[in-house]
Image (cartoon, rainbow, N blue to C red; front, side):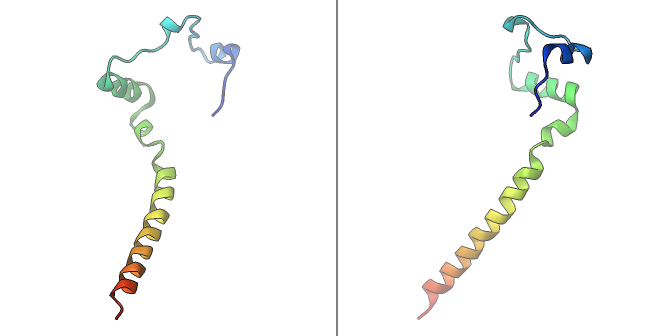
Length: 77
């Protein structure tokens, strides 16, 4: 994650709040989703999808592999 200094943010034309009360506040889940959609676009909701899939597929495969081998081992006479 990249951190920007106050001057870098101002050069980008963004407002820098000096007060915590001026920061963005959400009034609920739908307000949060609407602000994300409006400011970042629909793809913002899928930002963590690729790393999560890279984590889930191998672990699910290993689980089912171990499950199948356990079933074979328990069913042997």
